[in-house]
View (spheres, rainbow, N blue to C red):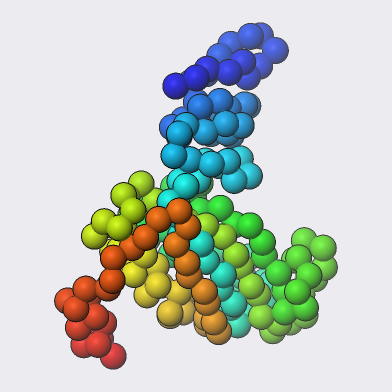
Length: 173
């Protein structure tokens, strides 16, 4: 792992994997190891799950539940590390970024992002994570109703959903 000067006194710190170069602290990445790509300040696996979800909520409720939303998205990939999810946009029902305008009360909130995975493409574990994420997006998330969602695989593949998993889902309905 690389070391990068992080303060005026010239001390170096070790970057947190998968950063190969970092600044300020070991978690703010400027370059990533092979197999990862920089997304904001995070290193995202080149094999990852992209999502876009529309929630029936307002900005106040969304931001009050933001951490719970992130943790729900991360649960299927078996981590609570918030840097394993990169949010690329949050928009109100008007299509404008929430930080640019205040959303109307009750306007849908659309969130887009990526969830990194350390699993191998086309492995059963990757499939379990993908279908688990699909299950999360197909329900209420952090008390917010999901109106619609898209989930896709970047940089790899997942195997078809197993009959065992499908049967388990059907028994819950």
